[in-house]
Structures are given as structure tokens and as C-alpha cells.
Image (cartoon, rainbow, N blue to C red):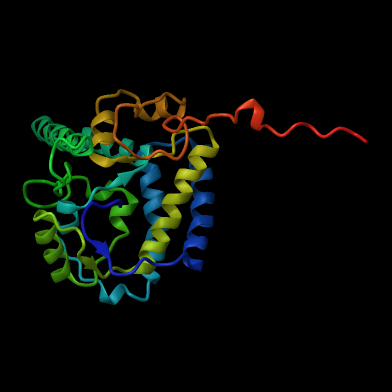
Length: 264
């Protein structure tokens, strides 16, 4: 979850949990690619793997999150992979009534335009509520939310509220104590998802969630076209362009290339 809001109290170092979750995540994503299943199947399986790690966290009993608390949804910019954005879009089309879907599209459009304005220095840097947050303060896509959303747990809800107030005033320095082992596992799984997609020639970059879902929800057969390497998300806001098609790999100039060694 890339954030323009408050920061965790500690930047956790890479741990064995991260590496184990990365290995398990890699095996799972490789299997999902071979199975060629639906995007919702991807999210179900990723969530099950993540859940096993979340249950084992020694800080589980200290978590202070509760249903209906939208603090992070009100202030954090969520980054998601194309697979996650596609799953969210398919869930919306499958489970929302036409009027509800229309309202969600309108919110996604508004948030995306505001985010683009902020990136272009045409609007003040203020937190934006997630376009998928309902009027009741609850996530409209909770069962299929990105793994980064389901893997972040505050250890102090009061600090979340304080960070939300200060972020709205333009101060993003507030620290929030988080379940660091949950973050480690989530980072390992998300990182593996990105890496394996890239290794298979697919788009594994990260995109701002609202803009990516807005793109995916308007494209028929989105998952099939994505797996066929169509550049689906070229008009979404890319927040981490670490590989093609967003990052152009430029070969080294000829004069920098190492000449082949000649036999003596």
C-alpha cells in the first residue's frame, strides 16, 4: 500500500517470514498461470495463502482494526497488480446492481481525475478516499480487495484516526504501529505475484487501484486479453513502473558494450 498518508512506526527489515511467503507465493502464482482460471480464483487462492501467515502472526492479538473503520481507506493510496484490479472489476460486474455499478464508476472516475491532478501539481496534496469505499464507510469489494488491503493491521485505532485528521490538514508524518509480521508476509506474496507475471512476459507493474479498476471494468474479456499480453493498463496510473510495458528497457549504447574476448 503506497501511501500519501501516515507512515508505520517502524520500517521492518526483511525477515524469514518474507522469504518463506515469497517462495510459497511463487509456487502458487506459477500454478495459477498453468491452470488458466478466473481472476476471482486467483484472489481466493492468494487470500488463502496470505491468511495462513496472518493467523500465525505473534501480533494478531494486538490488532485494533474493526469492521466499519475506514481510516486507511480514507487516506492511503492503494497499489495493485493488474490481476487484482481485474478481479475487482469482475466482482463489481457480477454482484452489483446497475445503479450501484454506475455510482462506483462515478466515484472511480472522480478519484482518478483528482489523483492525476495531484500528480501533475494541479491540485493540493490531500488524502483521497478510495473510489471503492461505499457511502456507509465499508469496502464495496471486501471479499476481493487487493492482498495489500487485507494484510495491513493497525495496533492502535486511535493513532489511525489521528493520522487521518492530520493527513487531511496536509501533515503526513504521523506514525501508526502496524502488525509487522503480517506486512512481511503480504509483501512477500505481492512481490512474488509481480515477479512471476513479469517472468512470463506479462504486466507485473503496480497501478493506483481506482484508476486500474476503472480501466478494467470497461474492457470485455479483460483477463483473457491481459494473459494474451495486451497492454490493458496503458491509461491507468502506474505507481511502480519496474518492468515492461511501462518501463522501457533501453539497450546499452554500442560503445559501452563489452567486446567479445579474442583468443590469444
